[in-house]
Amino acid sequence: MQKRVFQLLVDNNAGVLSRISGLFSRRGYNIESITAGVTADPRFTRIIIVTSGEEDILDQIEKQVAKLVDVRDIHELKPDNSVYRELCLIKVRSTPEKRQSVIAVADIFRAKIIDVNIDSLIVELTGNQSKIEAFIALLQDYEILEIARTGISGLERGTENVIYLE
Image 1 (cartoon, rainbow, N blue to C red):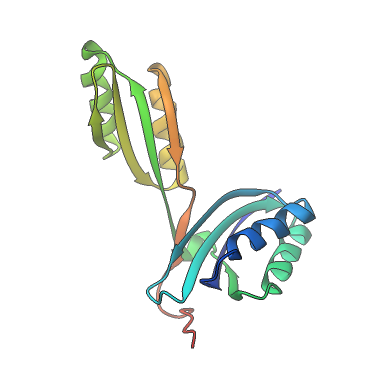
Image 2: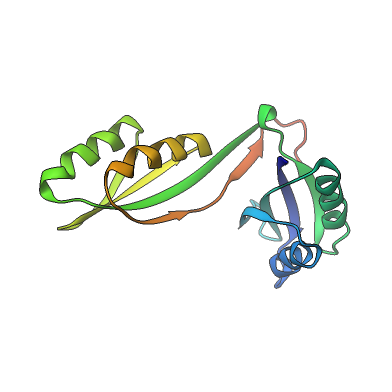
């Protein structure tokens, strides 16, 4: 099994995300994460899809998605030539006695405490998936109440493969 990160540039039309996820569903392909947001040009949306499978399946996914009407461009964001980031919010049970130790762990990872309550903290962390996984592993000594993750967002380094759409 391999993992691939695909970047799509699509027309910013109603239902485009549904059509893309429907293709994955109909074909039985798995989406590990999907993020979408408008680009600098509001006519287009950038979608990042992380999926895994055998190489021939992943090649098939790329070809099938490229055939969809609203898809203007699709290409793989290769790890050695791209920057990936993910945002994670974690709510941790935190009594006043344990609060300082949770904050100390957050400081090591350059995470931000964005909410403090009587019995919990919410921590915000941005980074690559391995950083987030390591942070979550260290918080296992505390009671994690909730986690919200955005999924990977990414861009290719440099200007060589920037797509200009008319």
